Image 1 (cartoon, rainbow, N blue to C red):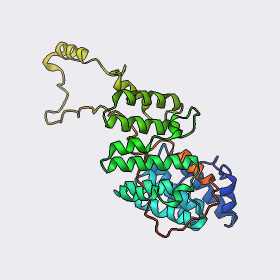
Image 2: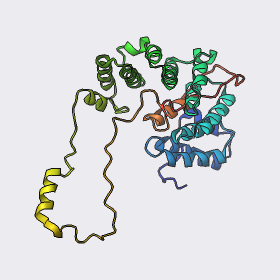
Image 3: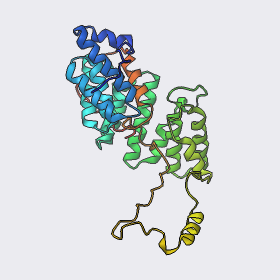
Length: 308
């Protein structure tokens, strides 16, 4: 796959570059450039990112950073079984537990929420840092909703991090998930409050919290570029029977435009197959240097979509 000339591979984190030093120089550069493209495209064009990840995997399948990148790319296009296999491989190579929430979310994606919940209670989950623990709760709450237990999902998300005044990278998503869970159990006023708090924390627009809030407030957005239906009717009347004479009699009428739904993230999913911020999470994961070791024995595959 073509790679822009300005991509050198030097953009990667130093720890990842260090991993690649075991490869011949030319090969290491090729792999690094492909990894840079994965990180760049993971959010905006996951299919392309997946293609670059497969190329890197073909070139250097024994490098943990490559297996991790391949896992995120597969996750981004909804290939959860493949993503889970790559995350497991990366974990075996490094002994790190930082991918545990992603693995559990892959389990959700594969339709196995019970396994995701079991992973949330496993010893590996207790070894996660604060960000990892928040991600684990998001996955567990999604699993509860998958199992038809929305009230339990609400309780799962009630953590000190939820009410913390400090803004973290995960604050908007945590508040959004909580608001969505509240909405599902019919606690509308509380849901509105937490969607509003999610908007406050979502400076990057990673969620559609503002749209959900507007929907609850009964606000309707009108596309200024949409032709006014009344004007169209008047134009049609003025045009008379000759209007549309140029159309073939057998031509099918144009399909009606489908209005977009209420929005992006499902509260029960934080799938990084299409979850915004997946590229950032991948880059953060590539830099993670958890020194704790773990064993794949007894692993129950990872969660799904985290939200997809």
